[in-house]
Image 1 (tube, rainbow over the protein chains, first blue to last red):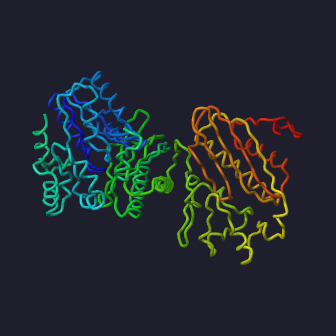
Image 2 (image 1 turned 180 degrees about the vertical axis):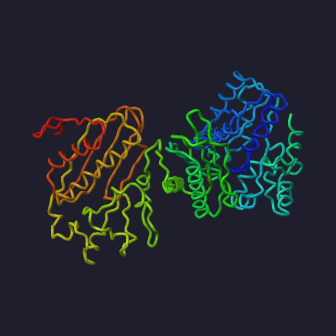
Image 3 (image 1 turned 60 degrees about the vertical axis):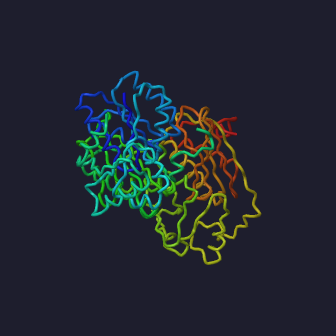
Length: 195
Length: 332
């Protein structure tokens, strides 16, 4: 069983990517469990997934990397017991630190072969985010196994190159793929990187 | 996680708030109106923090959980709609917002007003008006107050129904009462020429020479629902209004609600248009309550009587402790 954690800021397109990844695994014939988390007491992502025909376990009202850490671990154990999936995709809140989630997966005693973090950056608001919350965004991306620059369909000229250069400078050697989860541009390259 | 360790939400400086509720007569127009509420909140966030770093989302679903979701992450892109939902007699909704660099309470306030401005026939699962939670609520000079547009017309402090309200037009747009702050406005008001027919200060009554009475009633409230909050406010309002009609001066009406298994809530009315809710209004089968009213220039016994009737008229299921009085009611 492989566990994928989608790490990225609020509104970076993690839920859209989650749906595409779930579809890809379903096409491959792999049993996939989705776990979504929202920091507000009101969960909406679960409904979004349901509206699109996906079924997911929703953990609202807190962050799974801190206040809901115990809930995450119980949920993972239950998923393993009740669903026994080939893949678990975890979407933490956009304000979570993915490396903390990864550590919680590690200590949750589930039989995971490997756990990966997929970092998701957002073309549209990259500049604003770096201006206002560079340190936080850097923390979010720091432990990613690879970084996706999402919403490439909305990128202005030179924007992708600029963001790529920034990430390369911060995290040399980390694979970077510009994608559009919405239009599915370059998603085949992402699938190749996934087990 | 140690107690002192910051949560990621705190590290990021973000906040996440939301409402749930239901909408009657849902159709495409209602969807468009809800979508506009998201946009309005988005604009508010941009005005407050300079940019929309975060998202504003809503799920509108049927009883079986199927339905649509709306998502706003960028004002230029507009609201994304996922799924399809045919017209329904009633749907449930979740409305949430997670963003950076705004005040959590003000965000909730903005969301509530955005929802209110849609004109949708909706009800919230929690106590609907949180204006009362906002001790920062005040009107700045030149700023238009939208609170008076919503349903809480009972906050308005004009007693003559035929009287047109001029308060919001006159020079005192900066008039506001902070919690616990004594209002000195009426003194100025009087010295600048009073136009208010109900102003006690204009009636040459030396209130300082009159003794304030402090009336306390306690008992139990049953079957507390979110809408009970409004019923309590209406009861408090009725007591306040009655004191004015008796030419007395109300100073404070306070209701403390103490459920057995959740935190207390205290609702304090220190002015006709200022009520503060401390704590979360509880929904429970039974809770003890205490109502205290401080007023000048009215009979203590009459206030008790009036409180009893206000509670009775509000539709709340209440039982007041104490012996029966001469009028037959169970209060001291």
